[in-house]
Length: 212
Image (tube, rainbow, N blue to C red; front, side, top):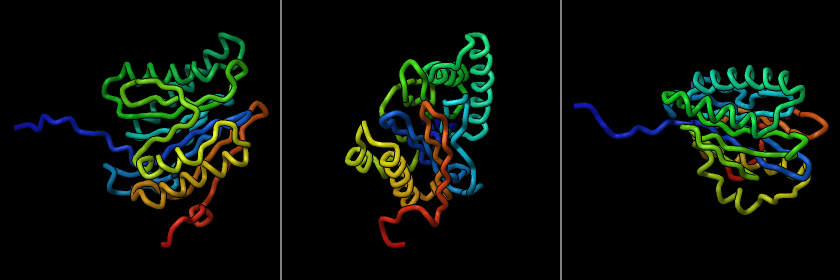
């Protein structure tokens, strides 16, 4: 007899994006797992650039997530040529939402973040199934359950760039220290009107909040 219970999707990661005064920080851990149990890779970069100042973090099935980001890159590139200007962040999030919603078998979720001239810094969650929600700060993945308290206590909407980068690094370090399928290095991108800065924090350089 078939098991008719709905099976959850193992996200096996920690994703985060947070806006600050003039920009947004988006980041993730680098560990990939199979079924949320077996660690298959330690250095996957889950922070994907889909346009000049728009990035996304991916969770769920790696193959599905990579297929969605590849399709989104193509559509946004074509859109920018048609409109003769860079796409809005909400446009990128909507493209990803449509890709996830229209393909029922896809098991991938995303955080999309970036900067545009109309709305400035923005963060959107594109959940598995296609729900789209805008937030000032967003966490996702299996490691997120360990840091909701830290996020609520420490996040401030108008932080400086350095404050927000340290906040994101600390949050990822806390999750990676507790979640067995989050780990490796912290990949982060700082996105502002001036451009994009990539930051990689090795595992041995991450802040420590408890004894090993």
